[in-house]
Length: 120
Image (cartoon, rainbow, N blue to C red; front, side, top):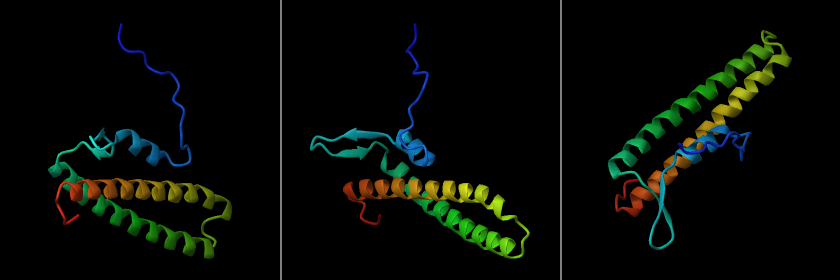
C-alpha cells in the first residue's frame, strides 16, 4: 500500500494563498549551526532572483495601471460601485503574490550572500 494522503488540508493563511503555496514550495535544509538555508544550487538561486525581479516589476506596473483604470471607470460611472469588490479581491491576490515573491527573492539573496556572492 502507498503512503496515506491527508484528505483535508488545514490552511494556515487562507487570506494569503500565495504565501501558503510559496512556503510549501521552498526547499530548506538545517545547517550545522542550526540556521536554515535554501537547498538550491547557486545558478538556480541567481535565476530565481532575476526572474522574480522581473515578475515583481511587471505585477507592480499592472497594479498601477489597474488602479488608474478602476479610478477612471468609477468616476465616469462605467463600473458600478458594487462590482468594485471583485476587483479588490484581484488586487489583494496580486499584492499577496508580489509580497510572496519578494520574500522568496530576499531568501535567495540572503543565501547567495551567505555563499559569498556579494552582488545580491
